[in-house]
Image 1 (tube, rainbow, N blue to C red):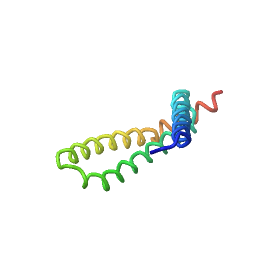
Image 2 (tube, rainbow, N blue to C red):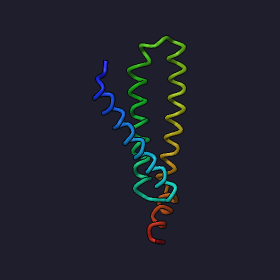
Image 3 (tube, rainbow, N blue to C red):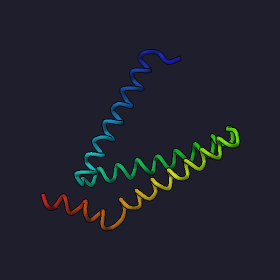
Length: 103
């Protein structure tokens, strides 16, 4: 059981993290290069975390649920990889760099 202080600390940190993600999303829309890098890092972290969960967690689940989870995670990791590849492509990098010089 979590104490009140632990609960508040955990939820405060989550709130700060999601506020940072919102700031990064706004920065991505405004073509800020640091926001693009933050999103790429966040997506890489998510893919690594999903791989870890799949390797550790699927073996302890019933067969049908484990297969469904593995398929969902594979599709989601492919989507994150595709978005990351797009954000790392030369035209997108140039677009983010050109926005800074046009101001």
